[in-house]
Length: 234
Length: 303
Image: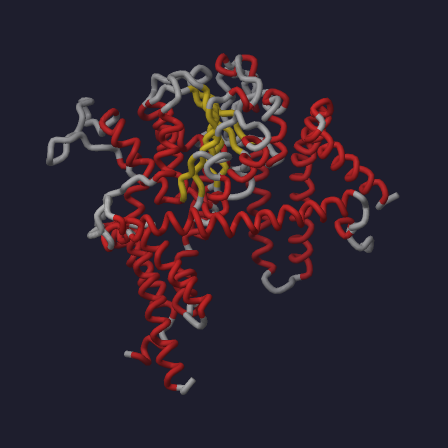
């Protein structure tokens, strides 16, 4: 039953969505199934939060190497959750001044807003910005013209890197716009690479993926592939 | 010299990258921009709308990609305001509501205070479910959105009266940093319902994956900060002087040439192209140096 029930739910949901796409009469069924999905997705946040706590609290109690990071993670999670759920420091909505919790959790000036603005926002932006340093270092160490394919990749990278900035316009600015050679201007070459080679390659990959997804989905819906249920061992 | 580069500590690379980004920022280096076909297509899609047309702005990004997508979000909102379009904001990302609020504070509240919440713009906020949300709202928006972001009932918002689904919007503008984003909007909105028109702005890494949908499923696309700069240029060329920087008395501040000074927030994309250009040139130089070392080493080893 532990494995049969999820399989039935999955097959039912999957086939309803599939049928709803092709038969207009059943379109409403598909909409209902999609709505259930949205409700489940909201509930999944509770499961996700519980799982996060479980994993990190275990790491802390076992004192595994790096358990301090888990402590920071749990503390941050609980702090954001508490100030957000309890709407600490939030002013009531102007329409409902008598109801203390009628304001939004992320109101400007509230503790949640403060943690977001001065904690979450700069930290995530910093993490993303650091990519520039690592990409530069990796390019210096690993981007080698070792064979023909690598040379093609390098050439394309140079065209795109230059063509996506004013440097490209400057370097090939001597070619007149209306000349037959205008296609060789770096900004035009960039567009050509993106719209022809990139699009053709990506379309081929996408069609391949779509066929793979269709066959895998059918296997899952028909109960042939049950790997998503796990091994059944705790 | 060869030995120095061969054993170059990566901290030198980090320092060079820091300088490549910091110097153009400090010198306020700006370079001319020329709009490409895709940016022009996005601009034209918005420009062709009549005043009062409903437009859905889906801001599916977070602070991590704000550096890349914030300027285009600002430019989109400004363009919609200048065109007097009715703006409906929503997001499929949990931190998206803050991105919406930031863009609203930067543009609508600062420069278009005459626009009234509920009549000219509304923030529908975040709903969980990723593409599941799109699948529902393409046929019935009110099934999921019963209130706006601030808890006001949809029934009490005048501009929601004639909106039943995403199909009622004249245009969907999506600013996307990944999943769920433009790909999902195309797959679940504009593909099954070709009457839904979508234009998008996305991060650099996402752009190549979205080109296959151009032009029938996605008429226009702004790729990364370059796309934002091009779009900004088009908006500035048409509406640049409408909201200049003003002094304490409310008079427009003029530059040395007598032209009104444009607020920096409307030039962020163009401004950020300076550091990007120098960083790209540095990357190319690093790759060339790395390859010179590789070939010298290989010839010395007799391979």
